[in-house]
Image 1 (tube, rainbow, N blue to C red):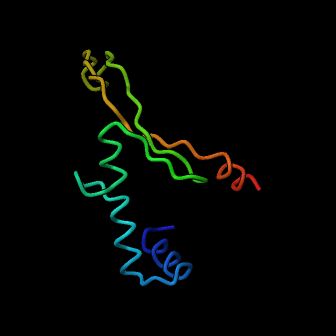
Image 2: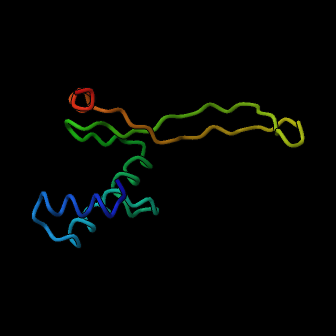
Length: 97
């Protein structure tokens, strides 16, 4: 399902206009700095929990040494944070059925 299809479906289910649904969806998911609520909350190191759906959070990868496949030389990969998602139990069970 694409973003456009999701907006259309949400509009039909909620009775809201597609323009309003698009605004809400973009306010939640926009990845530009300071724009999306989920992105900005994760950037602060906090979790976003949507009851019955799941939790968005960040994880950290430790710094490590890697090898450049082109040159064979060693490269230091710095520590970094990345987004993760853990689905809620009810969400996982709904998918199984």
